[in-house]
Length: 115
Image 1 (cartoon, rainbow, N blue to C red):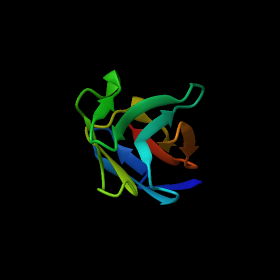
Image 2: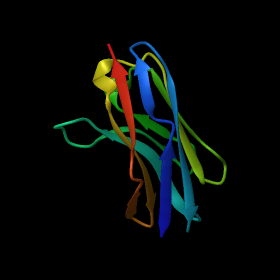
Image 3: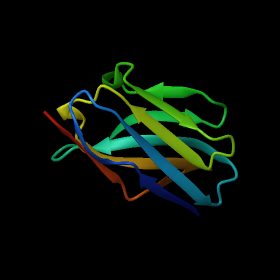
Image 4: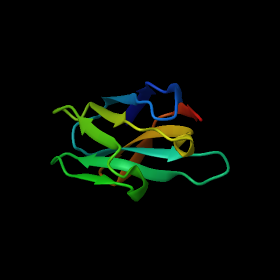
């Protein structure tokens, strides 16, 4: 089992920045991928960014170069630096891990961007 705990959410004005953190614990060996997803009110959960154990990254188109995902070498933490935040970025952000084809999720952290 992998446990994921997010932190760093909050209220920010449009144009501001936030840095989300996610700590992974438990059976973190062989985690293949860490990432961030988000779910806005009334919408489905969607991918924001992922990073693999090999360091490869993938971003959603709406990120538009505003967000940067990073991780520690042990795959025990993943971060999301978010700049130029927009009201449309308001959502609950979830940390995700994939290990041996199983998905693990954190409980989420709320990001609210005011206009």
